[in-house]
Image (cartoon, rainbow, N blue to C red; front, top):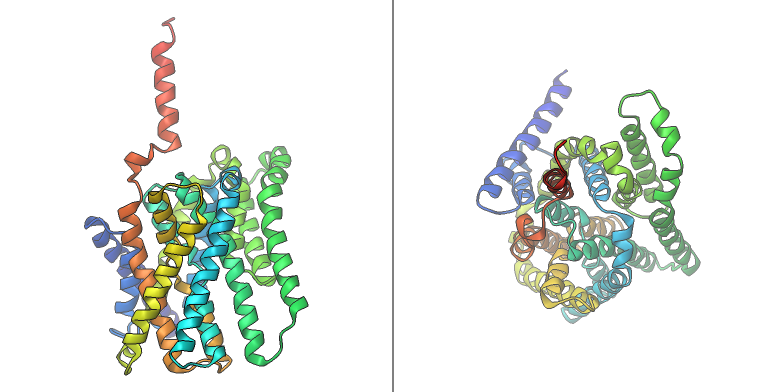
Length: 407
């Protein structure tokens, strides 16, 4: 009972603390996710020491990320992603190549080994789609063209980032299995395209059978089953679980309004997602920032990480105006948990030093913290981006009532 009581206390502190600071941030017109990240730093071992990194906390945080991306997927129709397909591909590819080259070049210039330099470059590659997706959702900006490009590119970006990590890991062990890398790449791309092109159609074909089920919210229950299944499948083939969660939401997006999926999914996401963001903050160790020379090198790496995404993704976003390019670039800046995963792998393989790990850690924290407020500054407010579909529907109904003759 003592153990379960301690677990419940940590969950209480994470949720209550995260929501309290999120409310404060929103009152001063900053994204709520920023407050949840700060709450994690305050509650974690670095400062108050009230919440610790445990397998249970990590598991709950990962479930939070899964349901956050599932909910975001429900709000994003496949046709919207396909509409910006080639732009998203260009944004992802250029946005991966440039940060990787900048990180690799600087670390080699600073005298670090080739493997350490490659791992640093790899950590600068992949965007944390969870951070950006949450901010876009909070702003009611998911329907904007820039948001669709960001979400599409972030999925591809994650796949490319994991391939870079696979290459870095194989180089660190002295074994590079090119056939294995090609297999992982083929599975990842094929899995994504399969869901984007056929997921919605398959679900639509089974619509009559789904609606005959007697269980309450049967469609929502099936969507949760698919979410968990695809999350496992994507993790199994080497893609992050959150990509599978996003794709499962995407598969149900065309049927979301009919089956009231968003209405059911949002409360679940609102409850679980804060654990993910608070946990990111808990994993920050403030003491590493005090090591000699770390801050100077970390400042340069942070600058290159931001510049690489702004320029790389901006160049890749061809055909878009300057403001939309800026939105896409900023939206792709946060590295978050993806960079932490890369750094953790490097540390586990004993291929990067504690100093390099600290530098990557600072880069992940800084890019995660600075992106939300800047994204809020450049994204249109909900009122300017257009009313949500439900409001438009109500307006159309009102207009129809005004135009129809009285009986």
